[in-house]
Image 1 (tube, rainbow over the protein chains, first blue to last red):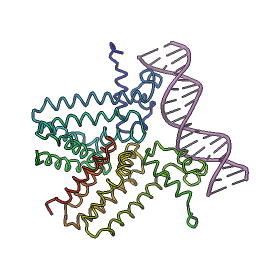
Image 2 (tube, chains in turn cyan, blue, green, orange; image 1 turned 90 degrees about the vertical axis):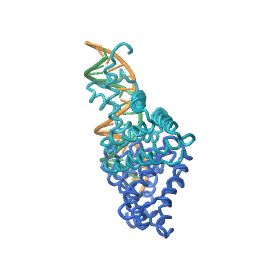
Image 3 (cartoon, rainbow over the protein chains, first blue to last red; image 1 turned 120 degrees about the vertical axis):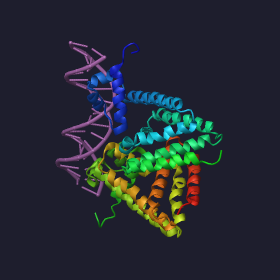
Image 4 (cartoon, helix red, strand yellow; image 1 turned 30 degrees about the vertical axis):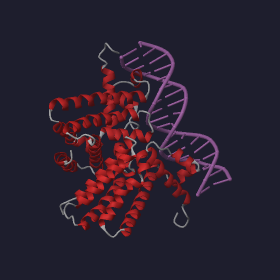
Length: 191
Length: 191
DNA sequence: GTCTATAGTATGATAGAC
DNA sequence: GTCTATCATACTATAGAC
């Protein structure tokens, strides 16, 4: 568990993460994950006893990756404005996948909400990671009390962009809206 | 079919519509719909042979209702600006349900996209109804070439608001963002 | 750790009586 | 039109050999 490389377990998580994003959690079966990883269903159950456990592992993995990404954005840019732009630009970086599958965070939370799944609060932590990080950047930009409102507004816009790009299968729309967001960030008046 | 009142069929569609919204399409079983309507599964299959057929019927029903709503908004207000406000205000009108289940259009399209379901294009017509209607209002407001971009921007914002209100279980956020949207509509400069 | 069965259950769908 | 079976399948999960 701790000493070995965990390579099979990691491969399961990685593949499950991908399939949950592309097909949804409920719509992805153990059999398919096992098949695509190249192991038997029996072996799969050695690593994860229930479907909730694999979902938890996937969410935890995403949390770790997200934290690493946010930390990278922080160190790569000294100015908070540039850091916020890093967030906005993931819409461009991932535009092909977003067009196909929407936002990985938003679509997962939306599905878990419908399923009334207990892992919803765990998945929501992903949103909260972005929220806390962005809020800090807005605060450093000079926005005091409005930092969280600005953050929620930005998160909201990015969710809307992902949803419509997915629904209308439209990458150009993402580019246009990202420009609007960038202008908004540049020109927001009150501090 | 045509002469009778179709009451059982209509009740099935109505209940399926509700359950698909609250629990998702894939996660809602025939058995549950039948049970909640108060009929047997066998009777259910008399009215709808496959799950795709009931989904089609639900989407068609939503299209009819949406068209009626848009037509009502048109006749209730003579000014295009007021009509657009009618659209924005459904976020307030339905804030309790949006908090619980998200946007009925966005969440359905998102799910069908993940399922790679053939009914996705049918469901997208719902988005298109709003898009065409809003575009017309913006054109009458005096926006020529930008009408569709403004429409997509507005649709995008409403989707984002619904997604975040659902994820964070937050109605106050809806109210705040609706005010921003209303201000945006009032103050948008270029025509 | 990995495999091959296999159990148990839920679901979509059908057959046939009334 | 509505009902009571019933079938077939897919999926979650388990047992036990290697």
